Length: 116
Length: 113
Image 1 (cartoon, rainbow over the protein chains, first blue to last red):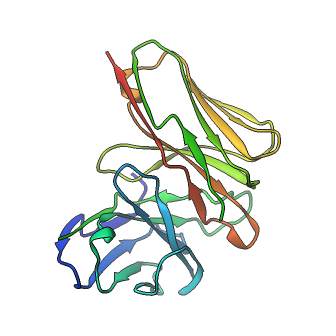
Image 2: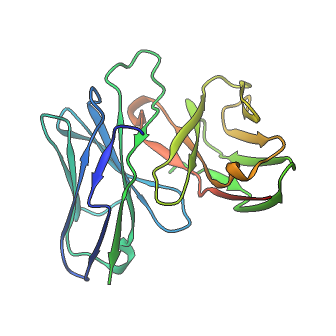
C-alpha cells in the first residue's frame, strides 16, 4: 500500500477520443510523475510536476499534457488517442524532504487504457 | 538519451535455484533502483544503490552497483514461487534529471514449485 491512488483502473476509448486520468498522491508528497508502461515493457517517463508546474518531460508529443493541483493531486490528459497509446499509465509521487532522497518513487496501481 | 539494458528478458526456473538479473548502461547514474511489479499493480521499490561498488542484501536478494555506476545486478538465492514477478531496474541521472527515472525493459521471473 503506497498511498497513491489512481482512477479509473480500466477504461476503453476509441481512436481520436480524449482521456483524463487522475492521481491522488501520498500525503506530504509534492512531486508527482507519470509513466507509460506498454505490455511487456518497462515504464517510460512522460513528465513530472513539482508545485503545480511541469518539471521535466520525456519523449512524448504535446497531446500528452498534465496538471497538478494545490493539494498535489494530478491529472494526465491525452488528446487524439492513437492505438499505440494503449498501455498502463502509472502515477508516482515522492516525499517532500530531499535530504538523503535518491529519487525513490511510490507508484499507484495504474490505469489500464485500451484504445480501439 | 540514457538507456538501461536489462537481461535476461525472461527467466523460468525451479524452486531452490539461484539466478542473476543484469542491468547495463553506457551512462552513469547517480543512483539505481530495483523494483518488483506484480500483475495489475504498480512497481514496488526493493532497494536503492547509490555508491559505486555498493552491495545491499535484502533477505535472499543481493543487489550490487558497479564501480563506475553504470551497471547493477540482482542475485536471488534459493528462489521461491513467491519471487515470481516482473523485476525492473531504474536509473536516476541526478542533477536536472533528478527523480526522472529511466527504466530497463524488465525481467519476467517465473519460479516453479
